[in-house]
Amino acid sequence: MKKTALVTGGDRGIGRAIAIKLASMGNYVIINYRKREEKARETLEILKTNGWDGEVVKADISNKADVENMARKIKESVDGVDILVNNAGVGFASRFIDIDYDSWQRQIQTNLTGSFYVTKLLVEDMIKKRWGRIIFISSIAGIHGVMFLSAYSASKAGIIGLAKSLAIELAEFSITVNVVAPGFVGTKLGSSYFGWLESIGYKKPLESYLSYVPSHRLAEEEEIANIVGFLSSNEGSGITGQVIAVDAGSSLISGFVKK
Ligand SMILES: NC(=O)c1ccc[n+]([C@@H]2O[C@H](COP(=O)([O-])OP(=O)(O)OC[C@H]3O[C@@H](n4cnc5c(N)ncnc54)[C@H](OP(=O)(O)O)[C@@H]3O)[C@@H](O)[C@H]2O)c1
Image 1 (cartoon, rainbow, N blue to C red):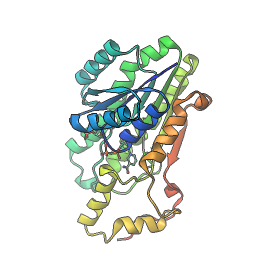
Image 2: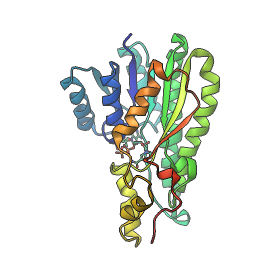
Image 3: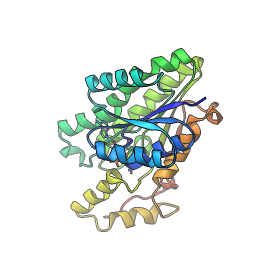
Image 4: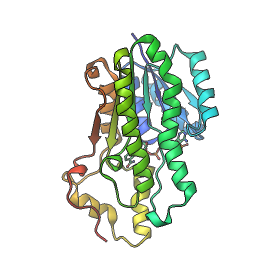
């Protein structure tokens, strides 16, 4: 039977690739966006051009009232979400001593609390149907930490704790909960990190980083989307509570970025 998927932050970047992948697998895909409606519609257009189906829905996931409104709209439009991909996220590089409280709060509020709001409001229908797939997009920063990303890393590590506990609680309803942890990807978010390193005096930080990565390349959006696709399918039924890195081998490295 056709399933319904929600991808938060599906308007661009990794979220767009995930929306395309899930639609190509026959799912009806709801593309959440925060402010770039034109980008979300662009993603929807890609789906429609391929003969797939979906819709767009606006919500700032860090805002509880917004998420409640989105959940209400989704309930009016479809019979609950079967596959939830908590992808939306923000990341700001900073030396720890320079992190301002607003920046800390925004990263925790969006990446961790926002994912919690969305999951809490949508899991009920999965429980009723006794089937569901929840996939959190964390980061390798949440597994092994990344220099100058302590707030981001904390938010992404929090997601892993949330997912693991939830996986235990929801197993009796045939709902799996997993985490995909991308390495650096050349999206706006990923590129901004290397730009920031350059701004504080690092010479060619991306080249330096890639020289350590075993495959000497970044991970790609579609590679993240492929594993999300697998975890969302019936074939992924035996996998729950797991953290899967898709990072072109970067978490195996023994060095990082040379100044
Ligand atoms: N790129 C990397 O190197 C990398 C590595 C590891 C993990 N990740 C994770 O992968 C996910 C996707 O990142 P990306 O690389 O695709 O970054 P991106 O291109 O910057 O896209 C981020 C997406 O999240 C959305 N978003 C941010 N805050 C939101 C909010 N409050 N409510 C709703 N949507 C919101 C953005 O919407 P707007 O268009 O409105 O800004 C955008 O659609 C994130 O969770 C990120 O932490 C990325």
